[in-house]
Image (cartoon, rainbow, N blue to C red):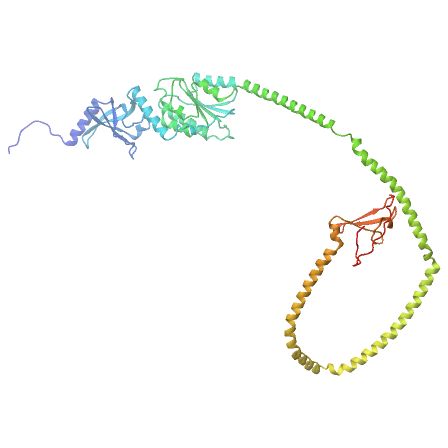
Length: 517
């Protein structure tokens, strides 16, 4: 085939691809593309993100490099309509063109609200907005942490309101409340306050206030970011949020422990009014004092009424004093009578204790003792001679050989008897034991101690004789009264008039005691 002559230049595939790449990049170096995100599956393992932007007529590939991903204010989400800012380029290996995205923003307020609602449903499904997670605010926090912009009316309103109501220690963590770094700074502030220790150089706050002034939805968007919402939900310190005006609502308001409509309302919710608290405490103190006086008055009246019904102290001891006087008067007479009685008894035995009579009795006892010693020596000698003769007679029979023979014969004779007597002896011992136990029970039943256990008493005189009749004793005599369990009591007979003497009854057949008195 004949060679075709032409002056057209010849390019390789790579040259064409590079030429197209340069042309596209030079012509569309910086563009804003509006479309719906499709095919987004999150970041790749390399850190880059790949997806497509589409509308009803066309599709364009999009890529977000790892370095740009961290700087994105709005992260890509499947189905979200966005405006992507970046540059067009090509991918020569597959002959496709794509947009390298540097920034993403929702396409209008409608898209922002759709994104906000989708994010709210997602976080609510995780339970971050559950009422069970919300904690009670401390009634009187010692330290309050405020997370807001250090310049502006918000921080001045909060500090002024806290100082008016109840002056407290306030720690301010300055952050940007709008812009690209707003969410990261607010999150770092919440986590930083939670990392403080209660006894550290900077005390840990008892309550946090996250606040900013009003603004558009774009201005407040940093408080709708997921990292901020999670930081508020996981904070160990109770948080009050006051973001925007009363009509503005952000996702952190759902996750916080208390949502205040304005920053000023947040300060009012954080601390009580000091003057009202002092008045309340004074009122409680007044009521307590009145109640104490009323209770003391009631007890005083009850004590006065009870004391009126008590007898006089002298009346309580009058009877006992009279008994003591009576006993004292009887004691003198009893001692006098006892002394006379003992003197009479001593006079009766004094004649028997004369020295002459005692010497004569001693001489008689010496003679009898000498006679008894002489007779004892004679008797001992005779008994000793008789026993020696008997021992000599039987000495021959007590040789070892004779004893062993006698023992063998005795054993052979006694063996049958021993085998027959052993059961009889055991039975006899058992029968004797039973008889002894019965006799012991009978003795115990006849014992007078059983009578004493039933409430009776045994009366004896100083010599141990039973006192059966009042005529046996007289005034001043000492007696011993025995009660149950061997308890004894020494008493003395008073000078009372004795009872008329009764005719004694004849003793019982057994010779036992009929009565203890």
